[in-house]
Length: 133
Image 1 (cartoon, helix red, strand yellow):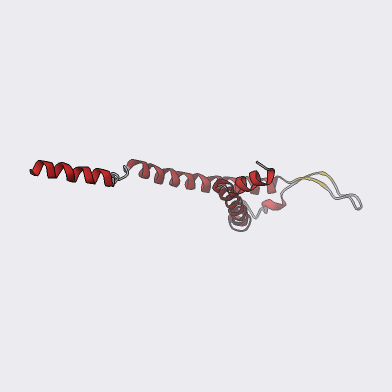
Image 2 (cartoon, helix red, strand yellow; image 1 turned 180 degrees about the vertical axis):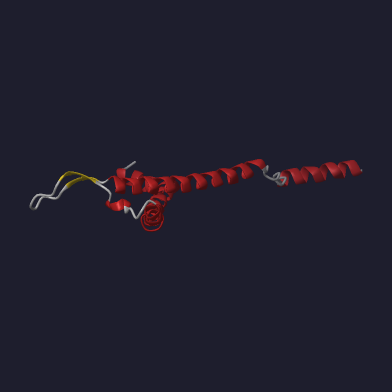
């Protein structure tokens, strides 16, 4: 099998397409959650803590000198990223939990019995006709 055919077969599988869609939606969801944390969650928390802006919180290791920027440990941005991660992780947990509940419900209900084949129907008719005589 040629490399091109193998690649086409790999890409055309449903799992690859599903993964690509998941990554794209995940990236968009990540931006939404980042905005939620940075623009909605953190300002009230900062206000409660006395007007602190977490995104500007940092420890200066070396002051700026000329055209060289200051060397900073930006722990405020780290706090924002950790909160973003926790929110995304919680949302994924809820989503997985919901999917697992739906799968359990599907597994709990047995599938309906299959309809008899044409041969079975014909044999049943023959049996009933023989009994009737």
